[in-house]
Amino acid sequence: MTGTLRVRVPVGADAERWVTRAGCRRVLLVVHNVTSATRLLDVLPLLSGDPRVQLLATCTGSSPFLAGVPELLASVGLPVIPWEQAKDTPVDLAVSASYGGQLHALRGDVAVLSHGVGYNKKLATPDNTGQHRTAPVFGLSPEWLLHDGRPLASATVLSHPEQLDRLAAACPEAVPTAVLAGDPCYDRILDALPYRERFRRALGVGPDQRLVVVGSTWAPRSLFGDGGHEGDGGDGDLLPWLLPRLAAELPADEYRTVAVLHPNIWYGHGPGQVRGWLDRARRAGLGLICPLEGWRQALIAADCVVGDHGSVTYYAASLGRPVLLGAFPEGDLAPDSPVAALGRTAPKLRPHGSLRAQLDRAMRDHDPGRYAELAAQTTSSPGRSAALLRRLFYRLIGIPEPADRAPLLDRLPLPPYEPAERTAPVRVLTRLISADPPTVAVTRHADADHEPEAPDADGAHTAVHEDTRDTGRLSVADVIVRYAAEDDPRVGPPAAWTAEVLARHPHCALAVYVTGPGRCTVRTRHGDLVRLTAARDEAGRADLCDPAAHASALLAWLGPEPLHTAAAEMTVVTGAAHHRVAVELLTPA
Image (cartoon, rainbow, N blue to C red; front, side, top):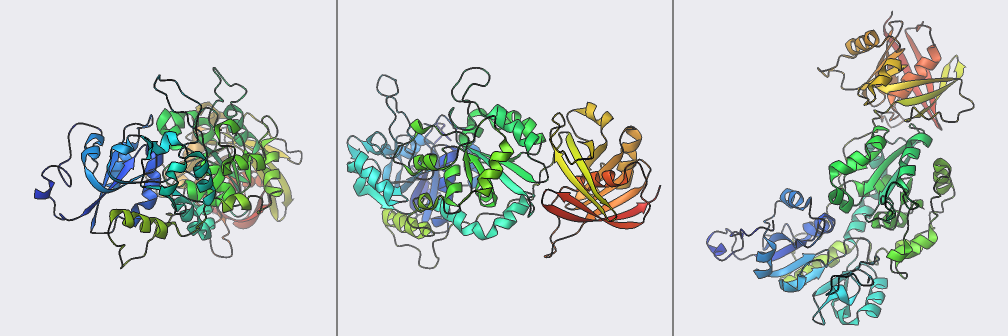
């Protein structure tokens, strides 16, 4: 990517000898890091289908966050030319989503997009002594916009006139280059809003569950950061408190939690390290959203977002989602920016208070119009960025726009089905509401060391995934669980696995083999083999409650007794949800 070997095709000294389409205009995508690359991928469809245009990519090499860039560019499949060659190569247009690198050295018109929700953060720049001066606003100050007193970009793309006003105040020399062209990232979100329920189901979130998204930008004063303190914890380090409370306080069948972390966290510290830091939370059910795809779908699906001063939190507020600010360093922001205004408007998370109470209050008391004014400042041209940006790009390239196709952005894809799978031991509290017909309330917490408050509970037991890291828990587990396809040759069929587990663990009362949404096979200590099948909803969709919760309800209903009927129906209550579960005796003891 940044090596000395120069690319010969489709650019290079003798490229005309080797190319098949020799008359193409050249458009160079200038990548600073993965964060900026994702915004360039948003606009890639506006140019990629035109046979008159050859797309190229390069990386400036100037970002501290270079990890992940080669893999991302390789997945896109465009010719990647070294930065030194890129500076020597004439192009018709260079498109960047960052001011990093020597953009002034490029040989062609340059269009610069924002790689977040407008321009809000301050970012210090080094002076000629190597010291960092007072931080200017990134993207709206002479330090970034000018070179030798002149604008380095032919087009400075803004999404709203409020940015133009701040640009005029901070760097009037760059105002002639300003172009209002909307926000393609936000437009993709708006386009996908009708598919909210699909995105929720992809994350395993049922109608009566609440999805909590924990979002963080990068740097020490972010939600994921440690506040800039040395050592363990510190006054600004919220994470060691927040992550355990997600598991300890939020009932597993009433809440689903996922984390959306800035790419600079992923690639600055390393994906393996990030997963390691979050390992305990992930084993308790926290979902970790890929920083390249899926975060927008998660915001659409969310019921509440715990965030900071990053773009993810602002986009969530723009969508009308309840927001709790876990971190918000006002000094890192332009005081007259929309994100700073969000910090003055949104409620703050109180460390060491009841997390569940704060989340429930934020959702219960939320006014959908609370952030309407801020949402209006996300873009002045909702749904129109594709048309405005393509018009700008082709004007700079110098050829007419394609007449045979409309300017369209890619639709947000439907994520794979990835429900929570908890391998941490789960503490289960039950209450037998009725024995005939059987109705059982179940409350589960993925923290077996924390006994949740449940004054109405009349029973408690521990359920453990067979793949738990804490293998010592298996010998004392009341319920052992496995998730697999019914015909999985490694562990199935369910009848064989359940018999094997009960033989190996004499203390276990129930072995549960979960075969899919709403379905599991259970063997009791008496030897009964039972199939539990949750009723589908009125539209025929599967019940997304974890079937292991249904198995725990069966244990609470039967107690030490065998199942005396070949078929029955049980109602399992999780929070506000009532699940009708068919109980079928496959093999009696």
